[in-house]
Length: 130
Image (cartoon, rainbow, N blue to C red; front, side):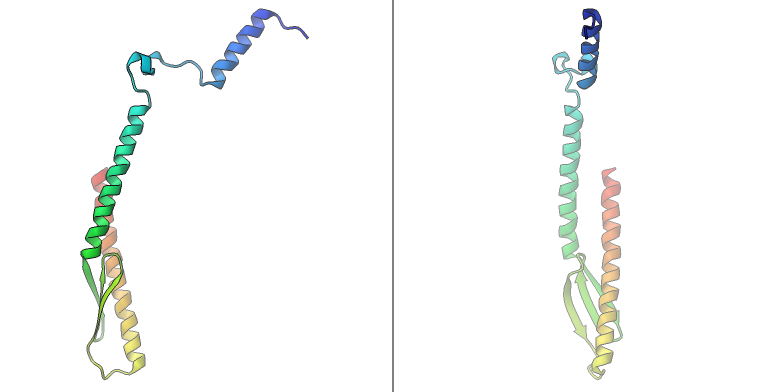
């Protein structure tokens, strides 16, 4: 089969343009002095670095914050990252079962409070980033 040369060249040009994104806007080309999408990419990179830095600061702050939970005569202290720091037992006349139950409830209380503190601080962080 033979195609006329004028039709063949326009099809080939059309295909080339479509394969490689069509015509480019000359104002966004590097030769025209613009950075194209590079400036946006740099802004996103800077934003990601800022988020990472603030997240690291938040984690450090949370590790220093102490939150207590109680149940009966048991007090459990965890840091803002939910890591246990201290357990205090008050009344030692409790049965092992009662003591175990109070310890579990105190841990649950401390964990819930710690999660709330962490959530509030993270929300503040993300609101500050926009």
